[in-house]
Amino acid sequence: MLLPGVIFTIIYAYGPMAGIVMAFQQFEPLSGFWKSDWVGLDNFDYVFHMPDFKQVLWNTVIISIFKIILFLLVPLILALLLNELTKRWFVRIIQSSIFLPFFLSWTVLGGVIIELFSLHGPVNALLSQLGLEPIMFMLNNDWFRGIIIGSDVWKGMGYNMIILLAAITGINMSLYEAAEVDGGGKWKQMLHITLPGIAPILILLGVLSLGNILNAGFEQIFLMYNPTVYQGSDIIDTFVYRLGMFSQQFGPAAAVGVFKSVISLGLVSISYYAAYKYNNYRIF
Image 1 (spheres, rainbow, N blue to C red):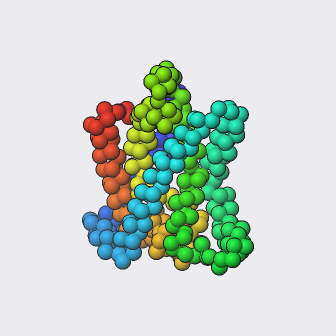
Image 2 (image 1 turned 90 degrees about the vertical axis):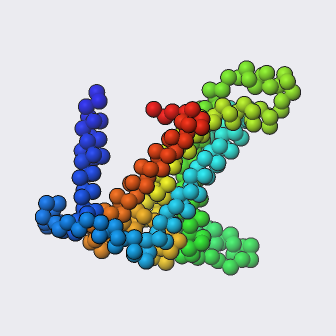
Protein backbone atom coordinates (compact mmCIF):
# COMPACT_ATOMS: atom_id res chain seq x y z
CA MET A 1 0.00 0.00 0.00
CA LEU A 2 2.92 2.34 0.66
CA LEU A 3 4.66 1.56 -2.62
CA PRO A 4 2.76 4.06 -4.87
CA GLY A 5 3.37 6.88 -2.38
CA VAL A 6 7.04 5.99 -2.02
CA ILE A 7 7.54 5.88 -5.79
CA PHE A 8 5.71 9.19 -6.23
CA THR A 9 7.85 10.84 -3.53
CA ILE A 10 11.11 9.53 -4.99
CA ILE A 11 10.25 10.73 -8.50
CA TYR A 12 8.75 14.13 -7.70
CA ALA A 13 10.39 15.08 -4.39
CA TYR A 14 13.86 13.50 -4.33
CA GLY A 15 14.51 13.15 -8.05
CA PRO A 16 14.42 16.89 -8.83
CA MET A 17 17.01 17.50 -6.08
CA ALA A 18 19.65 16.50 -8.64
CA GLY A 19 18.98 19.86 -10.22
CA ILE A 20 20.73 21.55 -7.28
CA VAL A 21 23.94 21.13 -9.27
CA MET A 22 22.73 23.97 -11.52
CA ALA A 23 23.40 26.39 -8.66
CA PHE A 24 27.12 25.72 -9.12
CA GLN A 25 27.18 25.75 -12.92
CA GLN A 26 26.78 28.14 -15.79
CA PHE A 27 23.93 25.92 -16.85
CA GLU A 28 23.07 25.60 -20.52
CA PRO A 29 19.97 23.50 -21.35
CA LEU A 30 21.56 22.09 -24.53
CA SER A 31 24.71 21.07 -22.65
CA GLY A 32 22.93 19.49 -19.69
CA PHE A 33 24.35 18.84 -16.23
CA TRP A 34 27.42 16.99 -17.46
CA LYS A 35 28.76 19.48 -20.00
CA SER A 36 27.81 22.83 -18.44
CA ASP A 37 30.75 24.82 -17.06
CA TRP A 38 31.39 24.60 -13.31
CA VAL A 39 31.50 28.06 -11.67
CA GLY A 40 31.46 27.15 -7.96
CA LEU A 41 29.92 29.87 -5.79
CA ASP A 42 29.90 32.55 -8.49
CA ASN A 43 26.13 32.27 -8.94
CA PHE A 44 25.57 32.94 -5.24
CA ASP A 45 27.92 35.93 -5.33
CA TYR A 46 26.11 37.27 -8.38
CA VAL A 47 22.66 36.92 -6.84
CA PHE A 48 23.60 38.37 -3.44
CA HIS A 49 24.99 41.48 -5.14
CA MET A 50 21.93 42.05 -7.33
CA PRO A 51 20.31 45.40 -6.41
CA ASP A 52 16.83 43.84 -6.09
CA PHE A 53 17.75 40.83 -3.96
CA LYS A 54 17.72 42.55 -0.56
CA GLN A 55 14.32 44.10 -1.27
CA VAL A 56 12.97 40.73 -2.44
CA LEU A 57 14.24 39.02 0.71
CA TRP A 58 12.78 41.76 2.90
CA ASN A 59 9.38 41.53 1.16
CA THR A 60 9.36 37.75 1.61
CA VAL A 61 10.14 37.89 5.33
CA ILE A 62 7.67 40.72 6.07
CA ILE A 63 4.78 39.12 4.18
CA SER A 64 5.50 35.67 5.67
CA ILE A 65 5.78 36.92 9.26
CA PHE A 66 2.45 38.74 9.08
CA LYS A 67 0.82 35.70 7.47
CA ILE A 68 2.20 33.34 10.13
CA ILE A 69 1.05 35.56 13.01
CA LEU A 70 -2.41 36.15 11.59
CA PHE A 71 -2.78 32.50 10.56
CA LEU A 72 -2.50 31.62 14.25
CA LEU A 73 -4.23 34.62 15.82
CA VAL A 74 -7.34 34.93 13.61
CA PRO A 75 -8.29 31.20 13.66
CA LEU A 76 -7.67 31.13 17.42
CA ILE A 77 -10.05 34.04 18.01
CA LEU A 78 -12.66 32.49 15.71
CA ALA A 79 -12.37 29.09 17.40
CA LEU A 80 -12.74 30.61 20.88
CA LEU A 81 -15.78 32.62 19.79
CA LEU A 82 -17.48 29.70 18.05
CA ASN A 83 -16.83 27.48 21.05
CA GLU A 84 -19.01 29.78 23.15
CA LEU A 85 -22.03 29.57 20.84
CA THR A 86 -24.80 27.27 21.99
CA LYS A 87 -26.79 26.95 18.75
CA ARG A 88 -25.08 24.07 16.98
CA TRP A 89 -26.87 24.68 13.66
CA PHE A 90 -25.64 28.26 13.65
CA VAL A 91 -22.08 27.11 14.46
CA ARG A 92 -22.15 24.69 11.50
CA ILE A 93 -23.29 27.45 9.13
CA ILE A 94 -20.53 29.80 10.31
CA GLN A 95 -17.90 27.04 10.09
CA SER A 96 -18.90 26.17 6.53
CA SER A 97 -18.94 29.83 5.47
CA ILE A 98 -15.46 30.47 6.88
CA PHE A 99 -14.04 27.19 5.57
CA LEU A 100 -15.45 27.53 2.02
CA PRO A 101 -12.70 29.83 0.58
CA PHE A 102 -10.07 27.22 1.50
CA PHE A 103 -11.39 24.95 -1.28
CA LEU A 104 -11.20 27.62 -3.98
CA SER A 105 -8.04 28.05 -6.03
CA TRP A 106 -6.13 31.31 -6.25
CA THR A 107 -7.01 31.38 -9.95
CA VAL A 108 -10.62 31.99 -8.90
CA LEU A 109 -10.04 34.05 -5.77
CA GLY A 110 -7.33 36.15 -7.42
CA GLY A 111 -9.75 37.26 -10.11
CA VAL A 112 -12.43 38.02 -7.52
CA ILE A 113 -10.05 40.12 -5.40
CA ILE A 114 -8.74 42.01 -8.44
CA GLU A 115 -12.31 42.90 -9.39
CA LEU A 116 -13.23 43.87 -5.83
CA PHE A 117 -10.31 46.28 -5.46
CA SER A 118 -10.14 47.56 -9.02
CA LEU A 119 -10.56 51.26 -9.71
CA HIS A 120 -14.21 50.76 -10.66
CA GLY A 121 -14.88 47.86 -8.29
CA PRO A 122 -17.26 47.61 -5.33
CA VAL A 123 -14.72 48.82 -2.75
CA ASN A 124 -14.02 52.05 -4.61
CA ALA A 125 -17.73 52.45 -5.32
CA LEU A 126 -18.34 52.34 -1.55
CA LEU A 127 -15.56 54.88 -0.98
CA SER A 128 -17.18 57.17 -3.55
CA GLN A 129 -20.52 56.87 -1.74
CA LEU A 130 -18.74 57.99 1.44
CA GLY A 131 -17.32 61.02 -0.35
CA LEU A 132 -13.75 59.67 -0.56
CA GLU A 133 -11.44 59.57 -3.54
CA PRO A 134 -11.03 56.20 -5.31
CA ILE A 135 -7.80 54.35 -4.52
CA MET A 136 -5.78 52.31 -7.00
CA PHE A 137 -5.33 49.42 -4.57
CA MET A 138 -3.75 47.02 -7.04
CA LEU A 139 -1.16 49.57 -8.20
CA ASN A 140 -0.14 50.90 -4.80
CA ASN A 141 2.71 49.14 -2.96
CA ASP A 142 1.39 49.92 0.51
CA TRP A 143 -2.18 48.79 -0.16
CA PHE A 144 -1.27 45.81 -2.31
CA ARG A 145 0.88 44.18 0.38
CA GLY A 146 -1.99 44.45 2.87
CA ILE A 147 -4.39 42.94 0.34
CA ILE A 148 -2.01 40.02 -0.24
CA ILE A 149 -1.72 39.30 3.48
CA GLY A 150 -5.40 39.82 4.28
CA SER A 151 -6.74 37.75 1.39
CA ASP A 152 -4.40 34.84 2.16
CA VAL A 153 -5.47 34.82 5.81
CA TRP A 154 -9.12 34.99 4.75
CA LYS A 155 -8.67 32.03 2.40
CA GLY A 156 -6.82 29.76 4.83
CA MET A 157 -8.11 30.71 8.28
CA GLY A 158 -10.92 28.15 8.16
CA TYR A 159 -8.45 25.25 8.08
CA ASN A 160 -6.62 26.20 11.27
CA MET A 161 -9.92 27.14 12.89
CA ILE A 162 -11.25 23.60 12.38
CA ILE A 163 -8.04 22.15 13.84
CA LEU A 164 -8.28 24.37 16.92
CA LEU A 165 -11.97 23.62 17.38
CA ALA A 166 -11.17 19.90 17.30
CA ALA A 167 -8.48 20.48 19.94
CA ILE A 168 -10.95 22.39 22.13
CA THR A 169 -13.49 19.57 21.95
CA GLY A 170 -10.79 17.21 23.24
CA ILE A 171 -10.44 19.12 26.52
CA ASN A 172 -11.94 17.33 29.53
CA MET A 173 -15.32 18.96 30.27
CA SER A 174 -14.95 18.22 33.98
CA LEU A 175 -12.32 20.96 34.11
CA TYR A 176 -14.91 23.52 33.05
CA GLU A 177 -17.42 22.15 35.55
CA ALA A 178 -14.85 22.41 38.35
CA ALA A 179 -14.04 25.97 37.30
CA GLU A 180 -17.73 26.94 37.44
CA VAL A 181 -18.03 25.47 40.92
CA ASP A 182 -15.02 27.52 42.00
CA GLY A 183 -16.58 30.69 40.59
CA GLY A 184 -14.52 30.95 37.42
CA GLY A 185 -16.30 32.81 34.62
CA LYS A 186 -15.97 32.31 30.88
CA TRP A 187 -12.92 34.58 30.67
CA LYS A 188 -11.06 32.70 33.43
CA GLN A 189 -12.00 29.35 31.88
CA MET A 190 -10.61 30.45 28.55
CA LEU A 191 -7.34 31.70 30.08
CA HIS A 192 -6.70 28.79 32.44
CA ILE A 193 -8.34 25.82 30.69
CA THR A 194 -8.97 26.36 26.98
CA LEU A 195 -5.74 28.09 26.01
CA PRO A 196 -3.45 25.72 27.97
CA GLY A 197 -5.45 22.78 26.59
CA ILE A 198 -4.83 23.76 22.97
CA ALA A 199 -1.28 25.06 23.53
CA PRO A 200 0.37 21.91 22.05
CA ILE A 201 -1.64 22.32 18.83
CA LEU A 202 -0.76 26.02 18.65
CA ILE A 203 2.91 25.14 19.07
CA LEU A 204 2.65 22.50 16.36
CA LEU A 205 1.02 24.94 13.94
CA GLY A 206 3.62 27.58 14.79
CA VAL A 207 6.53 25.17 14.30
CA LEU A 208 5.20 23.99 10.94
CA SER A 209 4.61 27.61 9.87
CA LEU A 210 8.17 28.69 10.65
CA GLY A 211 9.47 26.30 8.03
CA ASN A 212 7.50 28.27 5.44
CA ILE A 213 8.77 31.70 6.46
CA LEU A 214 10.40 32.09 3.05
CA ASN A 215 7.28 30.81 1.25
CA ALA A 216 5.20 33.95 1.04
CA GLY A 217 2.71 32.50 -1.45
CA PHE A 218 3.97 32.24 -5.03
CA GLU A 219 0.68 31.34 -6.71
CA GLN A 220 -1.29 34.09 -5.00
CA ILE A 221 1.20 36.87 -5.68
CA PHE A 222 2.05 35.69 -9.19
CA LEU A 223 -1.61 35.83 -10.22
CA MET A 224 -2.30 39.24 -8.65
CA TYR A 225 0.83 41.37 -8.84
CA ASN A 226 2.20 43.57 -11.63
CA PRO A 227 5.46 45.48 -12.29
CA THR A 228 4.08 48.57 -10.53
CA VAL A 229 4.05 46.80 -7.15
CA TYR A 230 7.27 44.78 -7.46
CA GLN A 231 8.92 46.95 -4.81
CA GLY A 232 6.49 45.91 -2.10
CA SER A 233 5.35 42.45 -3.20
CA ASP A 234 8.12 40.77 -5.20
CA ILE A 235 9.15 37.69 -3.19
CA ILE A 236 11.85 35.05 -3.60
CA ASP A 237 9.66 32.63 -5.56
CA THR A 238 8.46 35.22 -8.09
CA PHE A 239 12.00 36.57 -8.34
CA VAL A 240 13.33 33.08 -9.11
CA TYR A 241 10.58 32.55 -11.69
CA ARG A 242 11.44 35.73 -13.57
CA LEU A 243 15.18 35.13 -13.22
CA GLY A 244 14.96 31.61 -14.61
CA MET A 245 12.06 31.69 -17.05
CA PHE A 246 12.29 35.22 -18.45
CA SER A 247 16.02 36.02 -18.14
CA GLN A 248 17.13 32.43 -18.82
CA GLN A 249 19.62 32.67 -15.90
CA PHE A 250 19.12 29.12 -14.67
CA GLY A 251 22.25 28.95 -12.51
CA PRO A 252 21.49 32.09 -10.43
CA ALA A 253 17.83 31.04 -10.14
CA ALA A 254 18.88 27.64 -8.78
CA ALA A 255 21.29 29.36 -6.39
CA VAL A 256 18.45 31.40 -4.90
CA GLY A 257 16.44 28.19 -4.52
CA VAL A 258 19.30 26.48 -2.67
CA PHE A 259 19.73 29.51 -0.43
CA LYS A 260 16.03 29.47 0.41
CA SER A 261 16.03 25.72 1.13
CA VAL A 262 19.02 25.92 3.48
CA ILE A 263 17.49 28.80 5.46
CA SER A 264 14.14 26.99 5.69
CA LEU A 265 15.82 23.80 6.91
CA GLY A 266 17.63 25.75 9.61
CA LEU A 267 14.44 27.47 10.76
CA VAL A 268 12.53 24.19 10.95
CA SER A 269 15.34 22.58 12.96
CA ILE A 270 15.57 25.51 15.39
CA SER A 271 11.81 25.76 15.92
CA TYR A 272 11.48 21.99 16.43
CA TYR A 273 14.31 21.98 18.94
CA ALA A 274 12.77 24.95 20.81
CA ALA A 275 9.35 23.26 20.96
CA TYR A 276 10.92 20.10 22.41
CA LYS A 277 13.25 21.88 24.84
CA TYR A 278 10.87 24.46 26.30
CA ASN A 279 7.53 22.68 26.00
CA ASN A 280 8.57 19.03 25.89
CA TYR A 281 6.53 18.64 22.72
CA ARG A 282 7.61 16.34 19.91
CA ILE A 283 6.12 16.29 16.44
CA PHE A 284 7.53 12.84 15.59
